[in-house]
Image 1 (tube, helix red, strand yellow):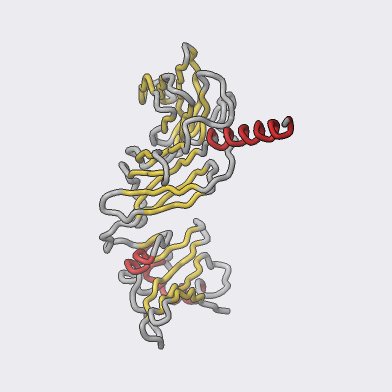
Image 2 (cartoon, rainbow, N blue to C red; image 1 turned 90 degrees about the vertical axis):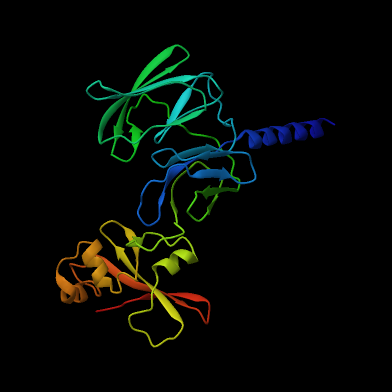
Amino acid sequence: MFPRLVFLSILFSLYAAVVSSQAIYHGHVQDAATAESLYNVEVFLLHSDQQTSTNYFGDFLLKNTAVDAEETAPFSYRFRNNALLWDGSFPLGVNLYAADGRLMRSLGQLTSGSYLFPTLPFGVYFIEVAANNNLHTYKAFSNGERLSIADQDAKWHSSQVLPQSDTLLFRRAGYFDRKIALQGRDTLMRVHLLKRENDDFHYFNELINEVAFEQASSLPSRSNDGEVSSVKIVYNTRDGLMYYQNTKHYPLHYSFAASILDFNQGNHIFNLTQYREHEERYLYPANLNYYSNQDRYVLQFISGY
């Protein structure tokens, strides 16, 4: 009987760890074409009652349970990226000050278990946190897009999370729903949503689905094949981004590079330097073709010597 009791005790402990474990899903949602931050995007953790929505700056934070597997002291809090996290329902007060002492935000009696710091202009700030009659001030830095703690005395979030499959659903009126599969671990993400009516745009940095391909594609400029549509692609080594250009508006790689990617040396120099190995090369053009009679996408590289 004793070994059986030990086994059941271990099994119960493992089960308790699973049900109490928590992953922090944290990120930013923006328009796939304009990179504009999207507020009031509903974020659902599928097969659960957990949900939230993006704030005015397009940021969101969602916990997949209410309690972290990592034990924390009562009335304690910790930081993660641009978020303040705590367990339980005790209130926290938060004040944000500019480096010159101006009060930027004053928030009292926060009880939701998390708070996302706002996007503030580039500079140094101070964050004052009041919890359980204790007051602490932390130094923070904003790069103009995200406010992050820059204080070694701050306690950082580090959860003990067991792997599990999760899926987030993002939903906003006028946009296609998007599902993101996750591994049940703390995750920081940037999510693009595709607008349903999306004609006047320059490029995508990500082709989210077949509709995005259709919105960006056109007939290839030169092809001996029938029933084919094409999206022209440029990989930019200067920023490490892939550009899926709106091929209806920019039928040539050069026209897109000249308008969007700061290439100002003319079409002839573009053909000499950007389609082959060259010391001035920083762009790598390609085509993504869809052959409807075969229902197949083919990535076509352009090689030159």
